[in-house]
Image 1 (cartoon, rainbow over the protein chains, first blue to last red):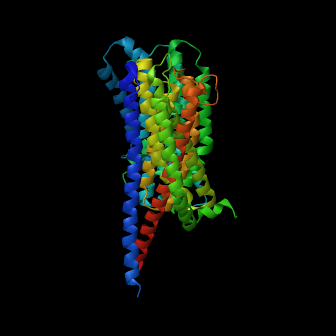
Image 2: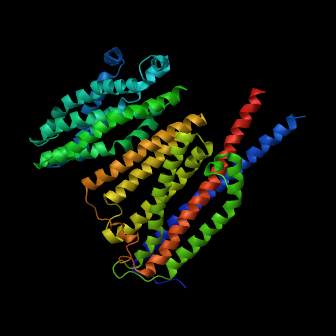
Image 3: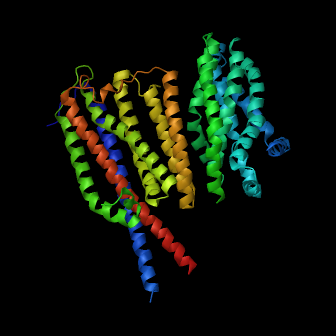
Length: 53
Length: 218
Length: 243
């Protein structure tokens, strides 16, 4: 059920495609960084627990 | 304060101080433009105001990282910070020294380059006037940028990234003054705006620069 | 109930934001999907702009949030400078890349829209140019955060830059108006002047603006959590070296 975009179809699709890609990129980058930092924090805290007798 | 100013001027003029460097850059920049856009005098006449202002701006930018870098490296910046002189005063003096060694020679050289680029006759007064009024703002903003990046190794590129967007209003009003002068329209309004920006930056940015210096010296 | 400043405590912030985050993310996702689907599939074409009017549902919310993100960074920087709450400085750091992406979306959709409407991808119009300058400010701000090693110094320096940059951004805005009159529509296209935007366009637009706003909030909460954890990693490693 694609709406009829007329002669500007390319522009509208480009705008939506590019913007949604950018939004997904920033969300993905945030999630990726969050996971990495979380894992590092767990490693460091585990190491600290070990040292403490 | 006067002693610090004289010391900075001395250091800049002495060999390796980079006194002539900005001027030489300005000259080369302006003479390279015709190679890029072609020698038609009509074209050059139109773009000359913008080119001359851009050249002055980049020449200023080139020498910014020297403002604090050398003093930072040999530790004299720490001495200045502990001296009775307020750091705001140090920043203001540094900006003044930078303006005397780069801004002022640019103002003097600009008419010659205006001839090279076929700047229309009535615009020369406005060119000299706008540069004389506008370059202090470039020095003051640049001092702030230099204070922000003083602790960073190879901060030169970062410095230009930070400072260039701040130069936008100065550049707009400066080039507009000359362009209006070239077109024979009244150019007093942009010149007054430019003067306003210069005075505002001179009044406020030394404080911001001093704050940044304190953080970097901590 | 005590004061707002309680959330300046990292531990308190972490627990509150962890409970809030799923809700905010869900609202953001819901608003974005509803608003964009409504806007894309179920709104009529404008009689002059044709289907390109649909780009408004991305362009206007992104532009609004791009400016609000900078304002939020300004407020957070001020809070850091005045009250020295670390969470505030980290929130400003977390917001910058999000704001930059929103600015990029506004510029990109504007260019795509301008191509058929104004006949060129880019016009040196004051509104477009000020967004380009805003983008440069975001770049410089992020670069300064990356360049300074000591986190407290970085927070101080970027705060000063943010304050000075805000003033210069406003000056640039008016300088640009002086410089070129421009083609861009007035704010009437987006804000509360109902006579200019018909209801059919207005409601989905409102939902999209809310969606972008909640998305920004969710991302800032999430990224601030990440920054707090990263700071803790740094502190723990420094502690290990000491002992």
